[in-house]
Amino acid sequence: MPFNEIREEEQARFPSGYGELDRVLGGGIVPGSLVLIGGDPGIGKSTLLLQTANQLSQRLPRILYVSAEESAQQIKLRASRLGVAEASSVTEAKESENNNENGKKKPVIISQKMEDKANLFILPETDLEEILKELESLQPQVAVIDSIQTIYFAALTSAPGSVAQVRECTSALMQVAKRDNITLFIVGHVTKEGAIAGPRVLEHLVDTVLYFEGDRYASHRLLRSVKNRFGATHEIGIFEMVEAGLVEVANPSELFLGNRDEFAPGTATVVACEGTRPLVVELQALVSPTSYASPRRSTTGVDYSRLQQILAVLEKRVGIPLSKLDAYVASAGGLGVEEPAADLGIAMAIVASFRDRIVDPRTVLIGEVGLGGQVRLVSQMELRLKEAAKLGFKRAIVPKGQSFADDIGLEIIPVGKVIDAIISAIPPQQKLGGEMSDFSEEDEEIDE
Image 1 (cartoon, rainbow, N blue to C red):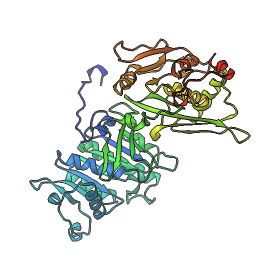
Image 2 (cartoon, rainbow, N blue to C red):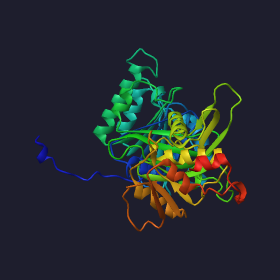
Image 3 (cartoon, rainbow, N blue to C red):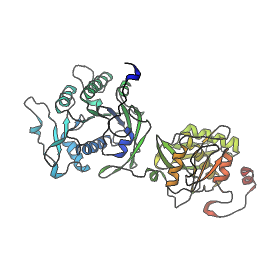
Image 4 (tube, rainbow, N blue to C red):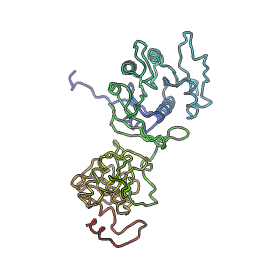
């Protein structure tokens, strides 16, 4: 049809019950969409989807959770730990009631509304044809497939999880979802490199690809969007894993700020943007004499190549001798800060650690460092500055020529060179503990 004859219709959405998930999806769940969620084992994918299914069951009449990895009893136990199925609203399902006359599994009701109308169903099944029959007969508004790598199509001789099985199973589920307007959440396993296992066509078939990531030894989890046909990519939602499951984090910037009551040398604060969300992050650096023939460089949450580049700029353009020193840089909370806007904060943290000085804790640093020692412009500056002002920061060191509103509520210090940022961020007389002391000849040369 001619392009100008296509009618514009606003995409209908409905809330998932979690604002962080809605943010990553672009404003809510789109009916009939396919959402692929990948992540490391044990990170909380099944927990997130079971809690989301429970939230949706409070408003929608039919939600189906297809468990291809766990039995109905295992799901029931996990639901009880998470507080999903309360004693007053749980139907006790017996094994004898889980089989019909043909020996096939039926969906088990684990939650009911007060009027005894079943709304959340569990189907422990790995056969694709049985799953498709149940989707067509039950007609749920939302269905969860956990996981796509364990479902098999009997007509194919290959093993579950193979390229052919994953491709055919996803394609068949997509056709049913689009035809019957069923929203599908599909769990995907990941490889040891962190990519979703199976053929690449799996990510092409679905509408949205989300990664659930985080340190298994830390409490917070990040839900990141890498593909979204109905919204922006690289949005993140932040959850915290507690005893009762996953809870949303109201103010995520507090997670990535260190203890601001104890000032320490070698720290600087930046504002990183993940999609449209600004996050205030504390960067920490440690510079020390090396014990080896070649110095060590190590990063946590920061791109290694960016660190190497910034070290070279500081030595060549500023005159700080770093080639024979070990350098370690980390982001507080383990958040991955890969965008160039954090370059200026990394540079200030390294310089502060080298001179054992304290960067003004009320100052945020935003800017990209060029190879010539210049500070380059970055995007979404106004959004970053408003987030810093909301958290109580007083000053912001930004690239010269950056445009933003005048009523931000911060003292703005524009700089064109890295050396200008060093002079503004690190008071030359202030050392550890706030004591005043005279400069040595080396100090004077570096400050000059």
